[in-house]
Image (spheres, rainbow, N blue to C red):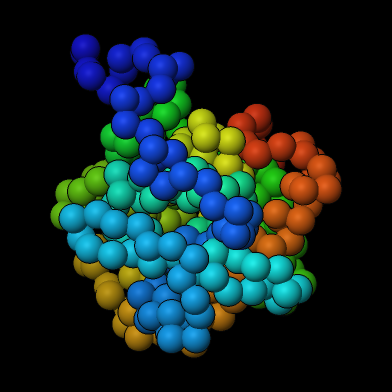
Length: 281
């Protein structure tokens, strides 16, 4: 089938460039967290200064400046919902001067053992969305940056937080997560489902930004009926996981600056957990 997504012009730059809209800022932190928990970002905004404000037809999206546990400046942004907007914001951050990004948010659990609040580190993503194909060649799955996986696992281990490294199914259509498709994704090793991960991994790889992600196991699609599980009210768990993502962004950016880690580079290359994550439930 001749789909537009398979057109091969990945080496060409776009007519519109993020750098033309958001030029580099010398005061921009080089580490950033994309946080999908709105109450966490709103609370941070009451005690932080905005480095800049990104704009879309949804309105203003402030980029807040905070500090990690080690005292290093870290930028924080809510990236919206869905792959296109999240990838656009990632490109804006890269243009501003960010080089290391950690994402943190909720994801639907596809396995019963992922109880509410369990941490899942992104090991790979199944590309059931369109945005990633504009950044990387067609493939069914894409591996997360192994250095990002290692940084997140290290921070979670140090904090004594139980976690798994797993594959995420990224989809564009919340209401088309059919029982048969959910079952197929489980058979392919997917532990959770979201709407942005595969696109962000692909966009980060093309832009040279390091990207890692950790999910809070949220609602559940593991059974015959959807369960909300009250995940939007699990505020302590959401804030706690954000704090760990902040620490991971700070640690990983320092490692990348020093050239440490298994690869010492921004993105690409084989994943540390190519089958979707050692320890995938």
